Amino acid sequence: MIPITYSAEVAAARAAGRPIVALESTIITHGMPFPQNVETARLVEDDVRAAGAVPATIAVLAGTLHVGLEADELDALGQATGVAKLSRADMAACLATGGTGATTVAATMIAAHLAGIHVFATGGIGGVHRGAELSFDISADLHELAQTPVTVVGAGAKAILDLPKTFEVLETLGVPVIAYGQDVLPAFWSARSDLPAPLRMDTPEQIAKAQMTRTAMGLSGGQLVANPIPQEAEIPAEDLRPIIAQALEEADQAGISAKAVTPFLLGRIFELTEGRSLTANIALVRNNARLAAQIARAFTQ
Ligand code: PSU
Ligand code: MN
Image 1 (cartoon, rainbow, N blue to C red):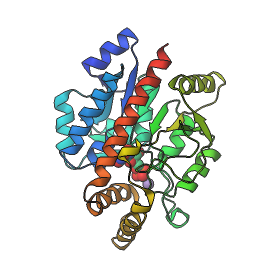
Image 2 (image 1 turned 45 degrees about the horizontal axis):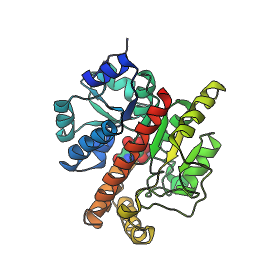
Image 3 (image 1 turned 90 degrees about the vertical axis):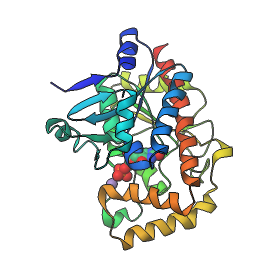
Image 4 (image 1 turned 45 degrees about the vertical axis):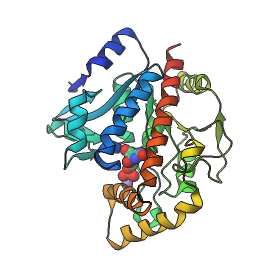
């Protein structure tokens, strides 16, 4: 009924019960410029393999849900224009109408769960936008974490967001937020924020066991693992503060809204930091992929 297809590598891993890590595609189509987007997607897949798991990059191509992309499919998606950005609200419609779309965190979680994949690595989740008290712009990623049993490894939520409100909403929704190896939450491009971590874990095994316990208790939903960017790759929060403020101001002036907000802000911050934000983004996604692979292995043990 659901038009779903697996890459050869993912099909073999499923048959053998090997650990699999889901990867999203919105970061490729809307989060990074070409050609760095495709290069990063490949590096991230290789990081997952090097850490002993199999990567499954997820996207909807011409009405079929792909769990794992072949090399040529990844190349084509990375250069395609006009690709939809899919979340819970529009994923089924895209499949039903034969469309092509990249999956956000929410949509990738849905696809991962359908495919029996427990762990997913991304850059940072969507969340509560600054000014949400007027715009009501709160990412569907938060509600997805509350209902779909997939552990998402990110460098927290993207620092363009209102981080305190994002973590308040996650708490309200009953989503475990686990800082990896430190007592404060990371802030995407920066390793540390001044927000205390609701939970802290220090091993992949603890994280896998917590998800399994949650599910065994009949609690719905996944967990967010907030994995700090490696220190040597981070951009200090003080350096970014004025740049984020400027990008937000410009988005406001230009009347950017809804799905366009996050891609616009990431694009402007890339320009304003002269590419530093992209270098950091690549480092943090790769770091998340490595941890996700370890967690996926812990799930299969
Ligand atoms: N992580 C990144 N870059 C991105 C994203 C995550 O490093 O572009 C994407 C994810 O797909 C996430 C989306 O779900 O940004 C959030 O979009 P929105 O704020 O419109 O919900
Ligand atoms: Mn939004």
